[in-house]
Image (tube, rainbow, N blue to C red; front, side, top):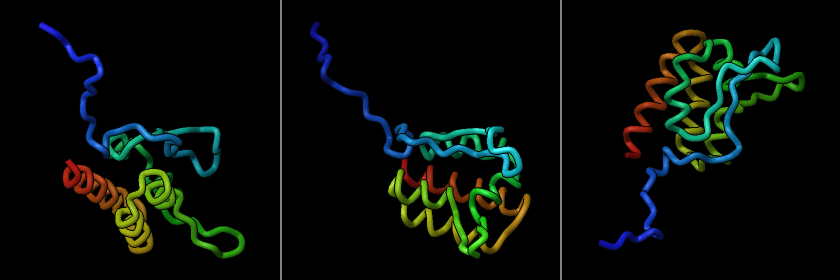
Length: 117
């Protein structure tokens, strides 16, 4: 019996680790990290453990120049190349706040993850 050592196991695209990771931090203490994700699957796995205020901070933040920023949407768009999902995250963050935003975000990420498998 021969084994082909060059054969690679297929990894679903949405589960494949990509760098840089997305890191959820405490808005009041940026050195405090609540979790990091290297893939959409990891994001789905950790999102339920992230405090809602950190999700809010990373999905809809208004800076001193009144610009709206969504770190998570930017990561989804430019690192994972998931443009449609990035737009959906931005829309959710403009519509919902607090625990409702967190719940909607978990449902959205999970639905996209299962859609991509």
